[in-house]
Amino acid sequence: MTTPRSFAPAIRLTPRVGIVMALAAFLGVVAFFWPFVVPPGALGSNYAPPLIFGVLLVLVLCVVLSEIAEGGIDSKAIAMLGVLSAVNAALRPLGAGTAGIETVFFVLVLAGRVYGAGFGFVLGCTSLFASALITGGVGPWMPYQMFGCAFVGMLAGFLPRASGRREVLLLAGYGSLSGYLFGFLLNLSFWPFSLDPNSSIAYLPGLPFTEQWQRYLAFDLATSLGWDTGRAVTNFVCILLAGPAVLTTFRRAARKARFRAPVRFAAPARELDPDGS
Image (cartoon, rainbow, N blue to C red; front, side, top):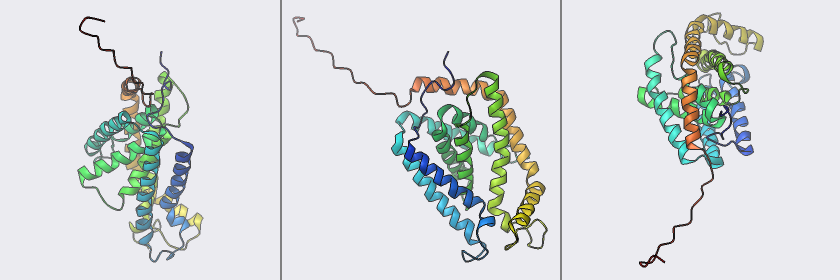
């Protein structure tokens, strides 16, 4: 029987790519948590930081994707990436309109698990980019969504080994947690502009970190907990019910594709003379 990790990941993460992704993660944390780390007025106005960090995130994603491509991505991985990106782009508009139900994450988690962290990172970027083009959701929030989904897929590839029912439960638990984490991070990108400054849960420049943090936690619980719970429950149920079949399908495709398998060219057969010699 083939074990869950007995084949090579679809995209190889070289040490240099690992360093680039670590730096990208650091910039991503700064981009999301800028209300706590950027002094008021340091970048000209309170509206400048998300725009500046949004542009930086796009540049960082381009660098990471180029490094991943240079490190090792073959035509079979690109084809799989295109198919799953199209699937996610088609699934997202079907479930993102009611009570936080979003069907895009469970495919992202399962693909990151089977095809590796690098593939999960790229799939998160391409899925959100494709769905934004389809739904007209292009805006300053898109880099943050792409970055958040990229790390949801990437972290799925780093989960510990497990098999059978334990693996499905592990992925379902991670999918549920990632639903809350994604919402928690995305709220940070627009929290400073979404409420009246006189509100007790609004962003107020210059406050100490602890008080600012308490305000944000109250804002997240008051405005987003229900939506994030819908996403978390959707992820958990979809992975629990469809996970075994999807994992089997993905692993069968990975075995047949044999990502990054060495190519061997056979010598051409010698042509026979007319007399058969």
